[in-house]
Length: 152
Length: 171
Image (cartoon, rainbow over all chains, first blue to last red):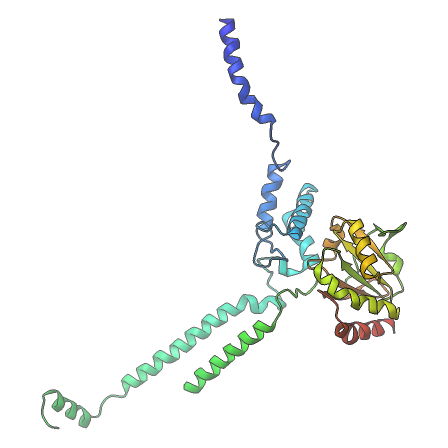
C-alpha cells in the first residue's frame, strides 16, 4: 500500500515541474495587463498608425519600459498619460482631450454630417419644387390627347 | 446650384491639397516654452558629467544624434559648419549609441560639439520627447526650450530660424 502511494506520488511529480520552469516573461502579470491596456490608447510616434501596444519600434519598446516602471512606482493611469503628454503632446493620445486646438477634430465630422444633411435637404426641396410646378390645363389637355393617340 | 456644387468641390480639393502638403511627422512639441528637463549624464570620451543647469546664462544648442542615424550624417556637415562660427555652445546628446561607435563616428566625420553626453538607454531622450533622431533644441539663458527641430538641421533653417532666434534671445 505504502509503495503504491509512493508510486502515485511519484507520478504526480512532473506536474510540479513546469511551474518552476519558464518564469513568466513579465515578473508581474497584472503590471503587464495594465501596461497593455494603457498602451492600446497611446500612439506610437515612430509608426504613427500603430498603437504603442502593437508596435515593436525601438522607441515604442522604450516607452513601454517607461510605462512599466511608472506602473510599478504606483502611478495612476492618468498620471502615466500625463507623463507622456508632457513630453510628446496630445498627439500620443488616441482620444485627444477636447480643447481649443482639437475642437475642429472633434466637431469636424459632425459639422460635415450636418452640412451633408443640409445639402441633401436642399436637393429634396428643389426636386419637390419642380414637381409642384403643375401642368397648365392646356398642356394637360394636349398630353391626354397624345396618350389617347389623337392629334392634339 | 451648379456653381454651388463646383465651389464645394473646389473647396474640398483645396482642403485635401493643403492636407497633402502637411507633414504628419511634425508633431508640435509641448516642451516649447518649458524648462529643459534636468539630467546629469556622463560626457562622451572625456571625464566628468554634465547637467543643463551648467549652461544658465547662455543660449545654446542641444543636438540629439547617433552613429546609427542615417540622417544625422546628412546633418553633420551643417553642424560642423555651424560650430566653426562659434556662435553658441553646441552640445550633443548621443542617443542610444554604443560609445565606441559614437567616438569612431566623430573621428571619421569631425566633431562639431563642445562635447556630447551619453544617453545609453534613451531615458533622457524620452524626457526631451525625442522620437526621430536627429533633433535639435534651442535653449535660452534661463534654461527654457525655445525651439525644437525634428529631423536634420539645414543651412536654410540655421540662417532663417535659428540664428535670428539666437539673436533675439541674446538681447
